[in-house]
Amino acid sequence: MLKNFDAKKAKLILDNVNKGAKVLLLKTGEKATAIFPKHITKYLNKKMETAHIDITESKVFKDLEYFDLRYFSNPKAEKPLVYSGLYQINESKSNIVCIASGCQHRYARGQDRRKEMLTMKGFPIISITNKGKAVFSEMMTNKGLYDPVAAKLIINLISETLD
Image 1 (cartoon, rainbow, N blue to C red):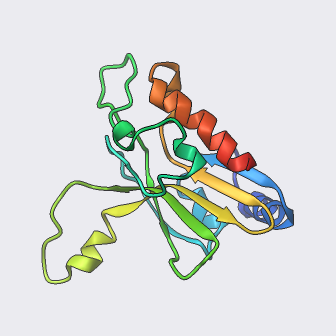
Image 2: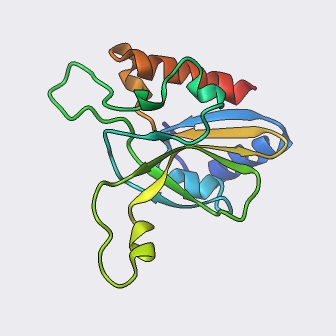
Image 3: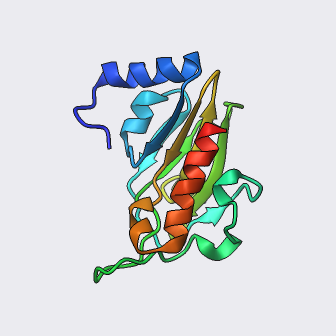
């Protein structure tokens, strides 16, 4: 988690990635839009029980199956949530990869369904590559103490970042 976050720290992270640094950013939430404003357009504060693998060959999913990103458990009496939010991205940027996706489970209604879908869909794991690499994840990897998939996912996220 980024403590005492401000524009100076956002610029520091961006500058370091542009110089070749490799950075794994976990649960940055809305702060991600300040770090990469040209790439990440919006953050949706949506917590859900399932995510979908978009890039099956990604190192993030090594030794994981397609339906593994569901229902991370822990010993608390709560929903088995998998991610804490979704990034929406600027699709015109070629150096961004959407590794996993998520969508709120409800019907898009009304005149402009496409516009309403923008309030429902995004990506809990993305990667931005310049000279360096920034991997952003909103996955609840903190549940890795209790859930083997969440544990494997954090190891794989580190591996993806360093690659």
